[in-house]
Each structure stands twice: as C-alpha cells, then as structure tokens.
Length: 202
Image (spheres, rainbow, N blue to C red):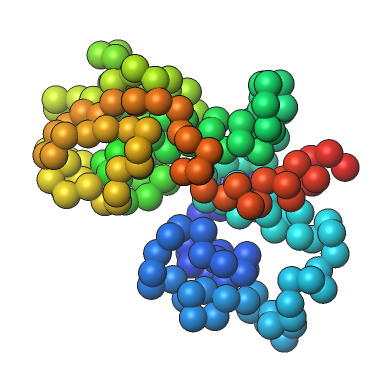
C-alpha cells in the first residue's frame, strides 16, 4: 500500500478523528466519518473495521507504507514488554519523527523530506534514512549549509511544536539531544495499539 499524499485533514474525516493535533482540523467540529452513515457510532463497526481504523490512524500519522508498519510491528513483538508501548516507542524514535518533535519541521512528512535530502547529522555523521533509530545520548544537528533553509530557520527560531520530555533543545539552537526513550505516559496513540495488535494477529 502506497504512502498517503492527499489532503491531510480530509484523511482525518475519513478516520473519524484528527491525527495531526491541529485545533483547526475539520474533524474537531465534525468528529465522524463523511457520508450517509458517518454519524453512526463506532460501536456499529465490525471488529475488523475498528482494528483497521486504529492501524490506519497510526500508519498515516507517521507516513508509513504498509510494509514499513508491518515490519515495525514485528520488531515491537520481538522486544520484551508491552507490544503496544514498544511499537509507539519505535515509531517515536525514528529520525524523521525526532526531527519533527524537535520542532525543525511543521509535519512528519516535511521532516522526512529534510532527512532524505541530508540536511541533518546524527552524532556528526550524515544520515539520510528517515527510519534510522535514534537512541538516548545521540545528538541531532542541522548541517551548516542547511541552516538558511526557511523551514529550518523558522523552526530553529520558534519550534513548530512543544518539545517532548525525552528530547532537549536550547532556544534558537540548530541541534537537539535524545535524553531518554519516551516515557509510556507521553506516547501518542496508545489507546489505538490494541486494535493494531488485533489487526496483525488475525
């Protein structure tokens, strides 16, 4: 299944809730799917449909293709502990996600593009793989020649979003640090992970 490239908030309507955290998302005013039966409560959906929606919410938020989502889930299963927590930690520790969480890009998709074009260093080395897993102690730096790119410069001056507790960044800085793995209470979409587990365990 290909990566979704259409209108972001139209996708939110289709999924029945905002997956981008935007207060202006149309799904905030109309928290139901479009169409004749869009207002039907979710309880009327089949188990499979609810599991599919949960999986799609997470996959679309992180901009993954189906094969990437499946591989990440399989990796989460191999790690000791709660599979849902492991899954979200793996997704939150992707380099493109970390660049987004550090406030250098307004969306994960734009962060992915910046990473792919080699605008960031990890511990001083060029990394252009969005799925690269960052670990505690690693430093993410904007390359010197990339600091005048308007999107990055604006994000360095005023981060696009609040920096989560497991990351750190000084004001107006072009670098960030991974302080720790994300705490369970700070992970997004945990309420949807049982649906993902159910979907892939069929």
